[in-house]
Length: 327
Ligand code: TXA
Ligand code: MG
Image 1 (cartoon, helix red, strand yellow):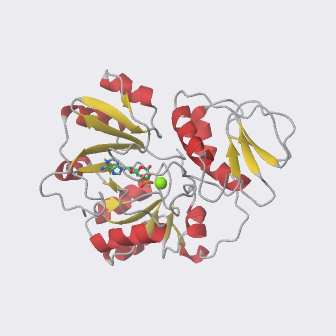
Image 2 (cartoon, protein in one colour):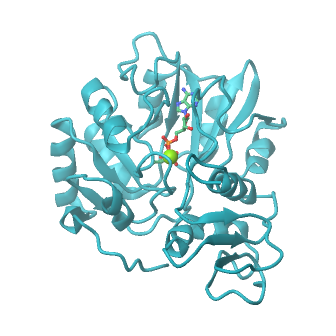
Image 3 (cartoon, rainbow, N blue to C red):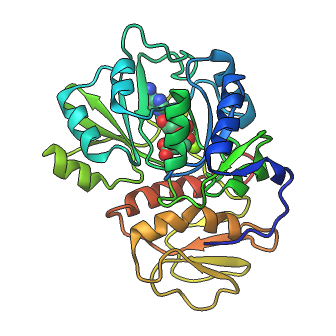
């Protein structure tokens, strides 16, 4: 794991996961405050999913466009069943991959108490049961939590508690260690009987297809139908990002995969053995570590589109997308 060298402004907000921290977290959540929550994918900025004002604070803290809906996190299947209309296929997928890095988008149930602001007024809800023990303990003690990744909108997602306090003024971050998966959950929606891949993520699309027995319909992450206003540029470090690098140019750092290209002054390797799951776990922390003033761009070696490589490449394309104010 990488150790960050930049100073954190409110390190005192970091509390090691455990019963005392759970109690503190629950008290803040009851008071309508967002907290930093560890999950196996990335750290979330979590607040009471049923409280409009608490949810509004999430959007405000992240600087997030309010039309971009949030994922609702639950401790168990019984609670999920009270919030959304499950289908037999959704239940089968959930039974296999929950708890874990998978989100299902399903119709809200008629009396679903989740804030409409959290789902941006859509009649569907994105729901997930995380696997991280600290998240599960807090969810069991509190109830459903709305939680986007705990970064400022458009920035790289956080995979340590320290990343969270470096960019958000939260009162408490539960420190559950570095995230094991390292990038966000796979999001699956449904069009009739057909499962649709809305965002590649921590569970390989192939594994879901094997279980479902059908191909996932593919939708570009951020298609207007379900996530209006999703920007192309996301996960953006300050330095530029150059994909599919076959050489190293002046001022570039190298983000390698497999055997590194020669000639870079600074190299970090997503996975020396060419393992896409290892690359996923290292991606965000390495993008952060290479993002400093001496570097003009991060050159990234090609990564295969198989397994978690699909999600890694999706995040890298967003990191490389043109942004306002820069070429
Ligand atoms: O791994 C994860 O999913 C992390 C951790 C914290 O659980 N959360 C996360 O949340 O990645 P966020 O807010 O960064 O991304 C949520 C994505 C957005 O792309 C949003 O558009 C989509 O989920 N989404 C939420 N509700 C939706 C809905 N009803 N229909 C379609 N997409 C939805
Ligand atoms: Mg995010």
